[in-house]
Image: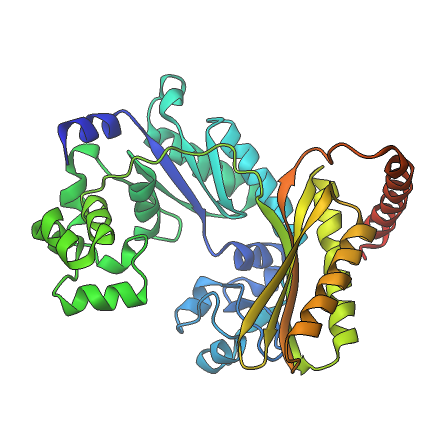
Length: 385
């Protein structure tokens, strides 16, 4: 690490807070009969995947993104609980309120994890460790949940630290000894090193961060190009990325994998219209408008296709989103050989807080659509439709 990079990192204190088995832990908290039992959040329907596995289930090899059928073969006595996303989102909002007590510099990664830059908060709270312990204590006492906290001079190392001793742990990396601390770790812990890259690295004799450190940037560049240079920097704990506090959603989407493949185009259209309705509701909830809409179709052979359209005027109105979904599907079905569909999805992107300049004759129409959408949202909220 260069003197300049080390100096810059030494001035920063970054926390990575990761809730422990979040969805499963919320279920165990809310249903005491599940405590101490292996819990899988998901569905027993065909093709369903595990959204979260409690630590009691992980002992048997169960993990997130694994097919539920496979998880149940590993742990036949596991309790399968359907996910309650709204409940998890409500808990997540409280978690982020706790974070906000200690710093406004928060970069949420998902419902259950976030980076927090507490550099400017040290004068108030003493140290990164003190803040990390305070957050853990608040999560435990106020929510009856646990989290793991990593503390380091950058995001990369903070995330590694939070994962080292899960669950319910706090791990702090010293800026002065980052390379030494990282050296024994397996390369699989490094961001950007997936199964394919890991296999390539192992083939050339690289198994740990220390192996990459000793190889040097020039050699790794020759062997792996820019990726090798990047891995060499990370192996020394060098990461210059700032905590991004503005992480507004870049898109909203909804998709469904079917229990049985669907051949009927009208049935796929009905699914897409329902998804467009949900996307519209979420856009309105965030006071956002979308310029581009996209449908996604995955056939039974797993080939996946998308078809997009840019709208003349950004919108969050269900009627216009549904019209776009219907038109996109008609265009797609007309040009593609149609066959059994395994998954379909609808998404909206290029989001903005304004719907743009409307022609005069459109203003009245949009006002009526807004009224209808307001009624839809009220009915949905009332009956949890």
